[in-house]
Length: 591
Image (cartoon, rainbow, N blue to C red; front, side, top):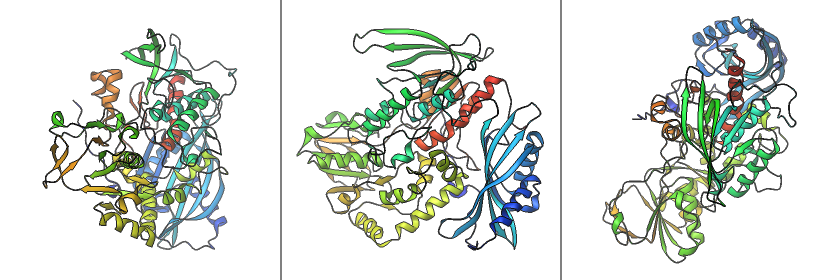
């Protein structure tokens, strides 16, 4: 029923970084004035041929990326004619050298729009200038909708009941129902409440953040704490670990929901869904369980918008098809069933999969005195945690506002972000200590992908890499054995047989092979196969580098929410504003 196709590889997306040719003593004041003049009267001649423009709902009213001077000029001209830019001012200016071999002049700009329908918008932008054949031209534009006058602000939480009437159409219980109490669902619910939009979060588990507490016991974030905040300030205490354990993540989520007055129904699931297209409403039957008594309650609610935030890529377990399961005397489980290996001390474990979860489970088994083999199917990108910390700490830290850090570090066109990360990590991989680590891994049979950037892996595969927080050294010194590039034949009574004839003995086999990545299958469990089968694909990149189905109303009143914590934090502000405009009956999209 669902046909899954690969998105575009980042190498095939148009755009490239400019060369490093900007002098430190460049006249930034002169260029700031030039940029303002350009924005007031954009002409094709001042756009570099390979110009990139990423618009975050500011001028086109959509989240989209455009490439090339012709398309950028045509779309910009149409948008400006409808939205009328005013009060353009440069707020900061500097020379950027974000990675080896590239530089440009970066100008942060603020402006307003005044539309004929009376809608007045506040916006920010980044204008990147380069020298092109001796002339200063615009190489990159990033335009960001901040808020609308008189309609609250998505970055400013409502800490007390608002004086004005909430945006709730007559006859509805909520304007938005969000399914899932993780980072995506809570981020969107927080933004909606900031905009005075009544929303309900439905969480299947016993508490928000259940996705973190229901995983293996040793699970923790492999990126910096401050990189993973939810909207509005700091989610965790400054004394919490830099790499947060799952229980602390979930506790932070619970405090967030309470602090910002988010309405959550836990132990609840949608048991049936009816969509009335003529009335543009959803009718939901929600079953709420009482774990203490075993009883349940069925409630009917009506809403205009339904946002599925159950976590793309973490739905149905993806199990490799292996014969011989019935004769295997040990335990063969998916990663979702693994908690810890404390009860198996002295036994033998085989972990199939070399992404983050595979490494984490292998480490837990090693810590509990098991003999561990990890099975690798293809080369795996390894990113030492030192690289990740170095990349993130300059923006996402206790001294920098998270929203400002997001604007500076996460809003460029996907191609630009991928190339910056890739170049920095490829440069780091050439440092002697990491060359040695990777060489030692390969000497023990672990194949290392030394070329792929982390963002490429995220956008195309949801992951598949490992941020090394300590397990790689155990593979490099032989504590964890590797079986690589040899297909599995079958499970035997005592272990796993491979095509080369080797049998590896095992008492425990864990398939750390992830989940079915077609989000529509999870959505189908909520809205039904008929609606889900007509939805566009989710995740993977379009030919211009936009994410499929991301931040889009995939059919009237239906949103699919997914991504990392920074992606959820940032994109939720635009989904919330798009919903607000719909509730107000305002069409803000340039046609």
